[in-house]
Image (cartoon, rainbow, N blue to C red; front, top):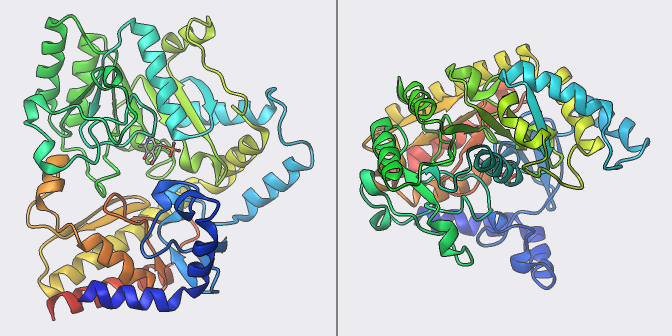
Length: 446
Ligand code: PLP
């Protein structure tokens, strides 16, 4: 009944969103621009955001822990980014010709990630699509390996073995390649081979098996820490083992840092965990709220692009507005002091959540890294997709979302992601979050 009670409360608190939704469905499918914005009973329609807060069409203020699926680690309407975009737009917003800002951004990304060559796109999906094509071009191979359950965007190569029901996962040694939703050709699905996270021996055995079948993979695409099962950190030695195995087999190692990139350290998970991939993909927070994406790689790999053997193209790549926002974001907002602030706030939030779980005797633990984190209410640790599906209480994330929304805290909806802090978040925001969780915990045990 907790869910029912909170749903009634949400309905009563969001009449303006209800009216917008009734109007929206007549011209926009499901009333939203993207299916990940669907929400029962209706989505909350926003008007604006400043700092750590956003406001909905009913005038309700929320502390924003959703942060645009982690894209807004700078916080909303950051003065440095507003200034950069305002200055740029008056000078022309698009030429499909390079501007100096794209050079500055490349130099800064090269410094942060230790990869010398960069190219641009406009989303995370485009970044992973182009990175995989480049890896295929470099190696002349078609098969790729991804981690079971990882999300790398909405193109066909990677819409495989995510969101899979528990019964269909398959054993660690031979996980099932399954298309996510209709419309993905079987021929493409067959080229994408999933392996479990945090299990380097399974990956190695699968690679050897594929090699013996004459289909050695072009690349392994993975997140260094999985960011769509809440947060799943790599176990000690795992990333080092993956690095060693891929190097030994001449397989391109791609770290998809679309979520981790600028959110967990200046040089992303690559820096945080100290393992250097051959390629990195970025998006989300790179553009400070403008559509963005980037691919970084070694000079040897980018040779296939420089020589035009692999086509890496796009009308809006390196868009001047995006590059101006990225430049301001990298040089003025996401400074070493900003990461110190995120680390301190996140440690406080993680500690506070764990204290609440302990106080009410709720089984589980809180896990996080810099700006990101989640509470796992579970009786066993989550180390990969299989344990994520087996051990979490499926209804709880939705209930937690409702509890928080009704108390002025916006979380990312669903089970995949819980919070991203921004550099403009404060202790008051963390307190509000902890209050919401405390009330949920209290009602759960009552
Ligand atoms: N890669 C990762 C790790 C992601 O989390 C996402 C989106 O959530 C993507 C790629 C796709 O990015 P986009 O939604 O910008 O296409």
